[in-house]
Amino acid sequence: MSYNDLLKIRTWSLDGKKTEHITPFVQSKTWSGSYRDCARQLSFSVTPEALCELGGQVRLYHEADILFSGHVVSRQRDSLGQTLDCEALDNGLYLKRNSTYLAVRKQTPEAVTRELASEFGIPCGQLAATGVSLSRNFLGVSLYQIIQTLYTLASEQNGKKYQVRFASNKLQVVEKAIGADSLRLVPGSNLLSCTSKDSMENLVTRVGVYDDNNRLVQRFDSPKNYVALYGLMQKAIKATDSEKPETTAKEILEENGIETTITAECIGSPKLITGNAVVVEEPVTGTYGQFWITADSHSFSGGVYHTKVSLDFRNLMDKQEAGSVPKK
Figure 1 (cartoon, rainbow, N blue to C red):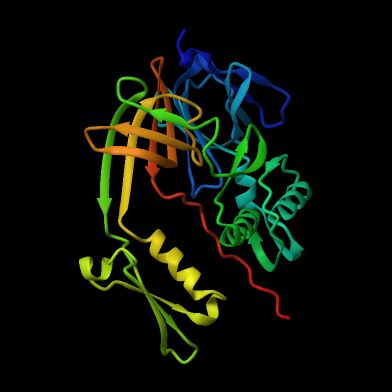
Figure 2: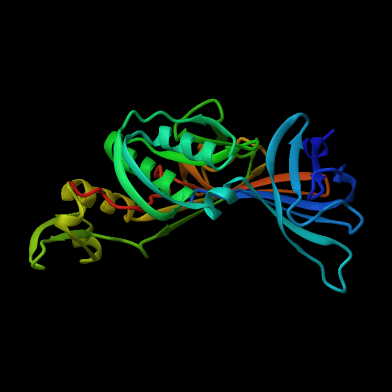
């Protein structure tokens, strides 16, 4: 029995009174997400007789494990087609669609996240503990922006990176680190193909710091001598916008260097999801080392399960800067 044969989809009616295993009616399915998305997506094609109502709950199972839990947000069928194409989003949908006004005063991101989840009826699981107390005003901001902004601010202080995602139907925030879910991708084993792309399209070689009178007061060049190699490409920031211009400049230069993007096609595994790390050993492209998954797409069709991942050697998180610092 293949792994794909163990994957099942169950749906519920909008009122929750009817439910059905629709796996026999499913022609294909794709489960995907990226580090900038606050909701993972499940796309699937089914024959019209399957229970699949707009707004109805849908779950993807591997045996008893829930890989995805969400709601159908769109359905499409054309006059020539024999299937109904559906898209579902997990509970990240509610982080994006709900906004609020909030005054945070000396609270940790994890405490605020748990309070928001409770207030808006979002099941909450494990939340990464930062131990960083913050104060900030949010005026009509989405729950995702609030949570991600607070974890971004904590990251700037402790140097750790975080990923907001859902496990089953529960909100969790994980610290991005090597762990039990980290896999080795090796040709002849689980790595089917690999491509590597280098780009300087978003390169920043210098950060200029300006005061309120628009005068250049500091400049920080890339430590890799990029100004001499590739020319001057400056990002200007205001000194008053950052308490530590040197730290901000360093982050800008690190995040806007030469981009090396790795795309890997693998034998399917639910451990290959955004936020997890992998170790790649691929001699043709010369890709060796530890990388972070920035996007993933799991396709199931004709009894075959493949996973395509985008990888980056940088440990990236979706940085948000919503809200403002309270006036003293």
